[in-house]
Image (cartoon, rainbow, N blue to C red; front, side, top):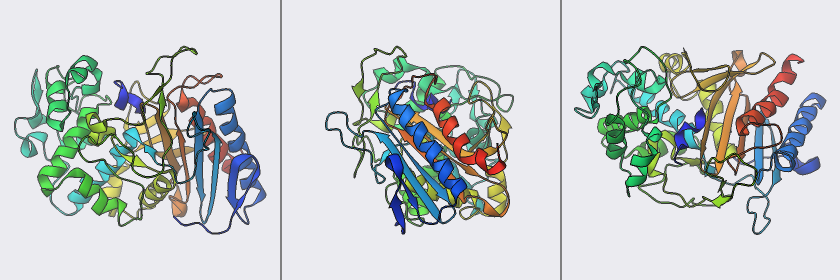
Length: 390
């Protein structure tokens, strides 16, 4: 699942208020308005029935945008969630990292067929791991077989600091999940290694590469990878609440807003906003970030196992087939107190024109949903399945 990351745990014009906490740009057709109303009802249910502190969703429909929210950003003050709120995006970070790798490939500075051993000599070695057999492409699509370091909670908890090298060392203390290229398993170690390769190729920090290549040129003012072990979220943000993955209704709730995300780094340490994610994925799905060859690489998928239902995985992106039969593209992510989905349509000339980003500031869900992913799927259905009359 997307939340494997955490087993440790633009200016708008013409926006008018709509009913029940939503805002929609003028001239929205009746069918779109109905979809927004259905989404707003689901947002309310997520709080009243699902027991979540707060939820927000932002929709991009071509030139129109809609923003809806329910619940609170801060349970102590009762402050509402806001459109500019920043939040931790977990594994959606992987899409940014894969994009940087593919840009470097387009520049001829690396090849997806290069091996981990070529760029990181001796790092992927131990307990039958062999970096000479692991390509960069395998890292990005989770077919490397490299052990997932976040599956070893005890080792993570023993470390006071979490530089990337130590995360890889944890993984190397276990045997691989399978022989490289022979299976599929979600592994955060893959993206830590990809981040290390970016730094080796460019000679610059991963955070700087993401800012210079993506955040700054595409106007993502609220999107960044924290430097070192900074536990704060810069700028306006909601509090992040966690039950530490306990599923009982009475489990205590902890505030995890301040968090050393260095243990997730390239695999899940980034911070963003709903508007930024819609803009980023809209540009990515629309082919405005990567050249055609790298675009094709990114969206070539492999089957997944023991992950999201009806999903396939590309290079840092996933496709999900909704119950109505529509397929959406994007990524999801989760870590303590923050679960997010950013998905859009990718079919024909309108690539990236239809986007939805959702975030909840809690990591549980009740009221008939097994977890926030089930509720996110219902929200995607409300948006994308009306287009096909289903």
